[in-house]
Image (tube, rainbow, N blue to C red; front, top):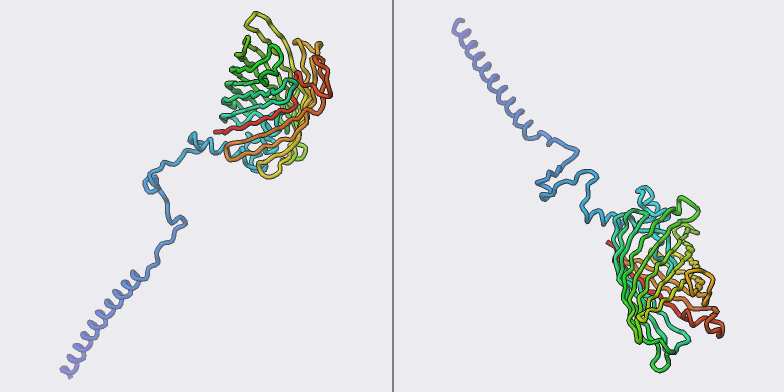
Length: 354
């Protein structure tokens, strides 16, 4: 009996050791399976770029832009529709810069603050009583917008005028001129502040003309009052200009001549497609033999079409005015004034902004 009891105790020890070892092995396998099947942690931002991992570029401070970025932003604001630009504050009230869209007539806008423009402006004149008459006046310069309302510019002027050989009247011959033309423009009212935009432009100039038998120097200044408004927002625009241009000519023989020209012009322009505008223009000009308005030399009425297009950062404009009626007090002849004015005037203008 004692021997049988000893065998039962030994079998019990062996079973206890077996179950103990088996339990440890099972727990180890469960831990290994847990490690193998543990899920990868999920994050909202899977990739966070530091300055080093982002190509070495430093992140810009809020509100800080490089000059090139500021110019690019200004161009986008200038060309963007009004609905996208209205919240910025520097946008034009109707999404269009009207300064150059009309032709000979000017718009009241002065460009976007900080904008530079290199420009060229040419006027070709032809058709007078003097046979073979033709003239070309040009200005090339740069303008800068001091604010969204004020702009200054400086241009170099060149001119050329000729009459047909053998047909030119006494004292008239080929001539060439050079000069300088500064200008200042200020917009007092915007189109969203009043029934019409309102600006004044002052452009004094000096020019030296070399001709035979005598040359002369000219001092003058153009005073231009500008009104414009949107007839249909972003589609139809109209402008009215009043111009007074006194001139003082000093000739090589000591003689002096004073004269003045006035102009009233009106124009409409239609946005045909994106940045392409077409329109029409009417101009009425008077020339006087003095600074006052009491010695009328002649008058002329001009009509003609206009075209303007903006291409990227550049622009191009074309205007053709034809004298439809006129009267001369110098040589009264026919239904036109071809002594003080020309039958045809063509204006070409272009520039690039940056």
